[in-house]
Length: 185
Image (cartoon, rainbow, N blue to C red; front, side):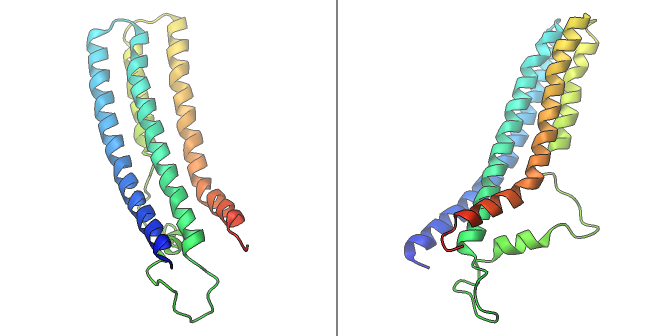
């Protein structure tokens, strides 16, 4: 591995670590901001439309979490394809034996009986969306308000479901694309 390659590899591993941490903090701070705004809206606002502002914060937080997750996964697949060579002869010692993390993580999967991890926090976002809509029902809304505000909430629920499904496929899609881009394959 050249010095430039080692520097790139180290920088990308650092980026993965930092973005992984940023994703969790973005989620926590976004949920706290959403909760505070939801409480203020429920207490002070009389219009059902007022819940759209906390929904916007919830949506922005989710999109930030998704963006960080996708970036980390994509960098991981890049490292897997361009820095972890599977073409070494059987029994040969890799040039850098420590560079097999991405392959090991990909192969590991989810063992039977292991706890599932929701990297997008989608269950929490779905529950928060439900709680965000609840104040609408206690303000005696007219049908048009329920349809408009409820529609906005349903669109966000759909976005969460689509993002979760896309995240489940992303690993395979990114891996295949980087393999196409790798010279000599």
